[in-house]
Image (tube, rainbow, N blue to C red; front, top):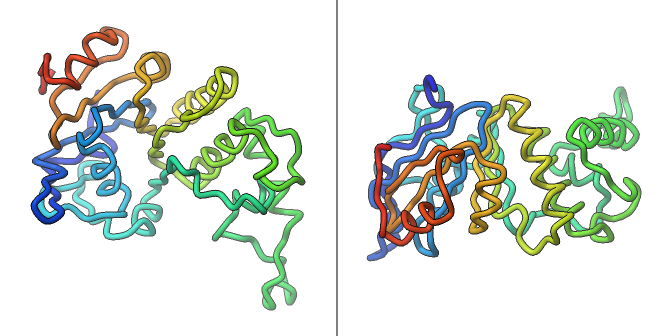
Length: 253
């Protein structure tokens, strides 16, 4: 598959006496959806935090395009083209979809008005509508607060926001949690579109049928280490569950 876009090697992270990561490794390639799975306490959230700049590992290394990088903040990760969609979405419910898309990156009007901090709402809405259209995100309205949209639409906006600003990789933490069947499929379609644009997508999920439906590869964590890797087309739910529980271990496969 060539050189990984993002690679973690032997990451260790402790919180007092708790070892969250015990030499965890992980790889993600451009143009793929790789699922990161594991039981509760396996270290998934801690690994993602270390790879998105929220936390720093105690030891180990992170490489981007084969070069060591230091992700000492989410800002540093974003500067390298890495974005994260968190499970709680982190959206502003009182703002409309366009304002959420540009939250923290607002555009100002050109000229003197911009010097005084006047925002260019028209341009932000135009660019937002274009981004939503390119990703196949269908919204009831772009003028209503995002809190008034359906769960699937809010999730799609959160995904779109990360995708618009990412250039290399997007982490998605349980992006379809608490969604209905139709809403879930819409979000997964956005995930596929992101992959098809050439980006790497890391999907963290407990939903095994969903993992098999949308991912290209699966990496399994157990007790703070990677214990198995699978090509999705050649695996089953039973194998994935076996790796998560310890009944099967095939690290290096």
